[in-house]
Amino acid sequence: MKSLQIAATGMKAQELNVEVISINIANMRTTGFKRQRADFQDLLYQNLRRTGAETSDAGTIVPTGIQLGVGVKAAATPRIMSQGSLQNTDKQLDVAIRGEGFLRVELPDGRTAYTRDGSLERDAAGQIVTVDGFAIEPGIVIPDNANDISISPEGVVQAFVGADNEPVELGQLDLARFVNPAGLRGIGENLFVETPASGPEQVAVPGAEGYGTLLQGYLEAANVNPVTEVSDLIAAQRAYEMNARVVSAADEMLAATSNLR
Image 1 (cartoon, rainbow, N blue to C red):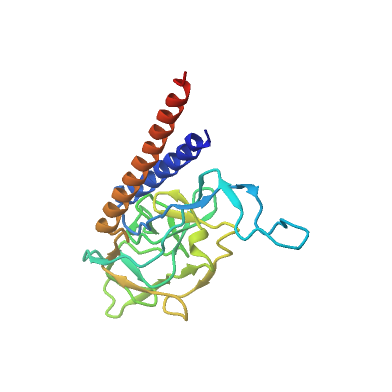
Image 2 (image 1 turned 60 degrees about the horizontal axis):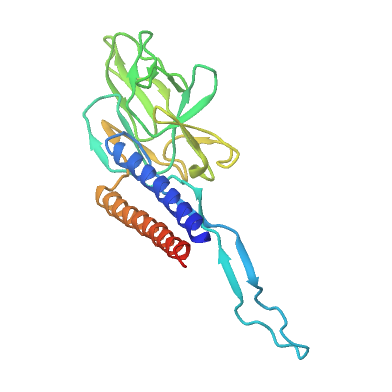
C-alpha cells in the first residue's frame, strides 16, 4: 500500500518544517538574524492513464487521466531578507543598516564574510572588529586618545583625537549588496558568505543608489514575528498529525485484509 510511504514523506517534511520554525524562534533575540521558511515540492507522478492519450481510432482523447503522486520532498529553506526593527542601544560603535546591504568582515582565513550584525567593538590595536574579533573591511583604527566617535549615515567614521577642536576622519565604512541576497550561505556567528547563487558582491558607500544607510547607536533586531511562527508551528503540527492518521488508517486497512478468511 503506497499510502504508507506517501504519508511517511509528509511526516518527514513536517519534521523539517518544525525544525526550521524552531530555529527562527530560537533566534528571536539574535541581532540581524533573518528568518527562514521551508518550501516543499511534490514528488514524481505515476501515470496509470496518461492525460491526452487517444482512446479510439476516431481521435478521442483522455480528458484528465489518472496520475498518482508518491509524496512530498523539501525543496529549499530560503531566508527572508526583510528589514528587522531597529533598537536603540546608545553605544557609540553600534550601527544598524536601514535598507539593503551588509557589512564586510575579514575572516581569519582571508575570506570576506557579510553580516547585518552591527555590534562593533575595538580590539587591543584600536581596530574596529566584530564581537568575535573579526576585522571590519575596510580596516579602521581608532586612536587610544580618541573620543566622541561618530558614524554618519554615509559610513564616515570621525572622532576628536587628543586636544583637537575639530573631528578627524578615521575611515569610511562601506556596504556590500547582492543580486540575490537569499542565495548567501550562513556559516554561523551572524555571518554569510558569497555563493554562485548570490552573485558577486557589489560594494559602495552607504546611501548610494540601492544601498541602505547606517544608524549609529542602534542595532537591527531579528525579523522573526512570534505570532507568525507560533501559528506556523500549530499548522505544521496538525499536518504531521494528519499524515500520522493516514499511516494508522492504512495499517488498519492492511490488518483487515490480512484477517480475511
